[in-house]
Image 1 (cartoon, rainbow, N blue to C red):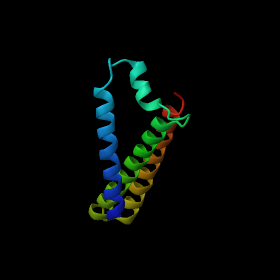
Image 2 (tube, rainbow, N blue to C red):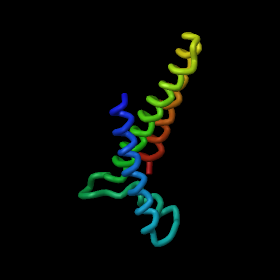
Image 3 (cartoon, rainbow, N blue to C red):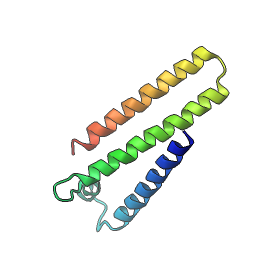
Length: 106
């Protein structure tokens, strides 16, 4: 878990830098340019969407590890902890599904 937390943090840091550079290099902040930031292709491969999906999966995994540790450390009743774990998993999976549906429908 320690290693996964650090790896996902590195992926998120690199993606954040890429987004910042891409955002700063935009000629104008329009919907078309914002969309192009996430939908660019390299040799027909949707690299922008793949990188954004990798970053969001990393975010969900990073959040799961952190929130799970909080529940395990501070919530003592087992039933409440289990309910919080299930709610967290459902929330993260739902967020991931919504993200993928939104991003890949551009």
